[in-house]
Length: 345
Length: 93
Image (cartoon, rainbow over all chains, first blue to last red; front, side, top):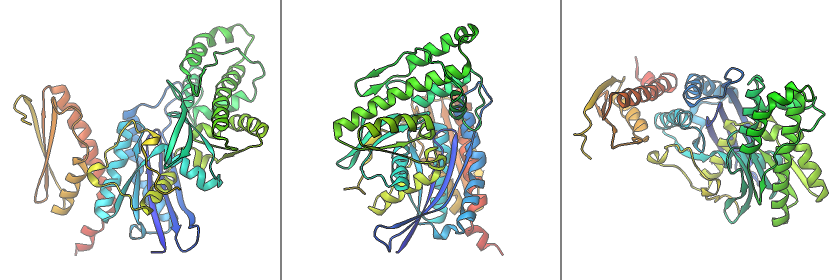
């Protein structure tokens, strides 16, 4: 077979993604083509976060239309699909299972194999594919995850991580305090507001070796924001600016520590928070000082999407890996290093 | 494991257009195991074109919860079949 097409289904948080990717095996290396990459996001009202039940309902309501549109845009039928890939975890239970249920049903109706994909590995593999980074230290930062990762001997090893909440979760929850809209994303709106900030508020900075902690800085800024704003000394923009500068500096520090430890000169930033231009800028300043380079993708790929699931899934499938039906259950906890990365040296 | 001590019961019989689709639905749902089998169990069987869901729980509240979430998944399966299955459609005159 010269060409393989994978369908990827993603729904671990509030973004529902469907992607179709084609690997043409007749070239070396294989030619990878994105046939379609569609997303529909659930936005709760300002001041609120997304809850599992509502998120699962959103995914169930939109997934079939999204799959239909993805097939149409790719100009293929289900007969052309080689494998169906879906997010096994980590993430929110109800949303994950809603999407997996569709994946299983399609697989049985169309007689296709299934591959359950680790969400984090999906981000990494799409980042590698898009940017061409050879062997970078990966900073994976989103609303649900914060990890510093490096590849070694068939596993994506976690060098450091957030001990309590993810950096994106910290930012999203502060956005609720300011009642910022959740459309297109609370983090995006904080980023825009932060651009107008000029004054730096002294906030708790918590790096513990290779790990970071955000619950302290979040609780500090949640508690003190009203007084800081009421004093007239600081604006909402200043608070957004200060929060970003603080949490991003923590991420840059631990990423640098990993680079120094491994002797790597490449940083790949993946995950929704990776879209943030200020984070990219700060990381770039550090990397340049070390003669290094930062790789990042745009919102099509750094925000949760279906194509990354198709990509990570098809790579595993090409090594002979499939997930038997009885093992296609979903799990809220799924460590990045649990995956055997058979497709890399 | 016996369900004798789980006194709250409900049985749902869901018809499908064919035994093939009933079996597919059952296989899809069967993957997700009972979260707390000691207090809530769901037994899935098929007979011809009908899928039967037998719920056994210790409390009414648990019964409501498991029936509701199961029906949400059944609905998802049925809708998926409605949109994407062409085997049954091909066999129609």
